[in-house]
Structures are given as C-alpha cells and as structure tokens.
Length: 191
Image (cartoon, rainbow, N blue to C red):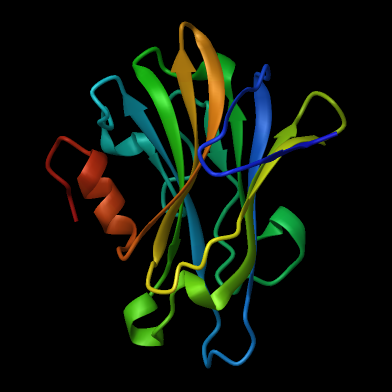
C-alpha cells in the first residue's frame, strides 16, 4: 500500500530501481493546450550540477552515468496516469558526486499562453517500484493553489549517510525551465 505524503514529509525509500511518475490534468476552457515538462536535476554536495548533461529533460533524455532515463516529452498532456511524463531511476548507477536528484515540472510557453499551475488540477508525483510489479510505493498530491507559479519542485531524492530518501517538496516559482538550469549549474550555459 502506497504512502500518501504531505508537503515536507521525508521517507526512506529502500529501492534501487524505480519510476518517478508525474501526472496532472489541465482545467477545461483555458484556450490553449498545456505542455508541462518534467525535468530531473542531479546535484552534487555543493548544490550544483557537475555538468550540463546531468540536467535531464526532453532534450537530454539520459544522464551520463545511465542512472536516469526520461521517457520523453508529451507536449499535449493527453492520457491518463503517468503517461504525461516519467523518469526511470536506477540508484545503483548514480555518479558518486551526486547527492540529490530534484524533480521539477514547468509549463512550456506559459507567458504567451497565459498559463500557470492554478489552471492545473490533480497534480502528483509518485514512486513506483520497478522490481515489484510496478507497485506504487509513495505518492505526493500537490494540493496547493499555485495561482501565479509556472514551475514547481515536486520532490527530491537525496542521499544521507549512504542511504537514499525521498522528500515531497511542493515549492512553486514563477519561472521557466532555464531558471532551474541557471540556479543549479556552475559553468557557462551554452545556448
């Protein structure tokens, strides 16, 4: 039975291979289709990305260590469940420098479409055990009203004393995907 997490709650996950699935439903009548994008940011102990290829998103689907694999962009958000977007994680392959994996969802082209997370409902992040018949281990449902936010840190995997844990974050920003790269990348960003 899955654990229903609250914002800020932390759990020991006890998994090596999992899928991190994210889902949402846009409200009807907003005028445009929603294109929400899932990204994973692999961070070292200095809270920085060691190199750009540790930023996993629709244009970089696999981490250099092979630990993360993005299932690809779903630009129209059609479908049920996690088929919006997912990231497959194998913690046994994570580069030794990585201490945290942050899962972020942003709204593509939010300014032109005048969209924000207040127009999205039933948003969640969940952990699925790959080794146990795809059993749902934990779920965090975003129940706050993010009426101006366009990017949300949904949750994070982080390493403490050699063990991986998960925290339900739910931190909103009025920013795009580039903001998160600039926030966590220490080198020069090539555009």
